[in-house]
Length: 198
Image (tube, rainbow, N blue to C red; front, top):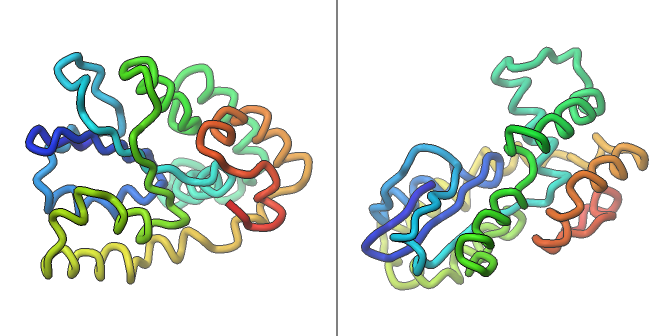
């Protein structure tokens, strides 16, 4: 997880939540990158400001599935439904890549509060622009990074392709039951798979 001792900030970047989009920004701001998505549980950092990228759990799950196909972790013949029903229970017991709230819960236990600021995938540029460390360091160079990584980001446009079509009522209910705490903690709508709302 990237962090800055100078700014006293952690920036939690879970997989498939605009990690690649935000990485050039954290690099420009001279964050040290521990080169993983995990939270560093260390008392030395107890007073650090905590930023967390988040994303609609339904949408993020589709993105994780597409990523698994693109990187040849699974065959294209495996359907999203089959992958979800096998992957989610396994992840909940062991790996913790899918349930964002597992990380949030670690943070909550460590700092005794939720993250200080959420950067929502669905409102990426708006939330970044409202972030104090972006405002304080904004200049022409950072604006150019925003142009390349945020405003004209091919990853985000590709990743937003009609993810709702992957879901049926039954599958959405299955996913929601497992990831209910994600929806609750991160304030995402249970029925967003139907109407595309956050």
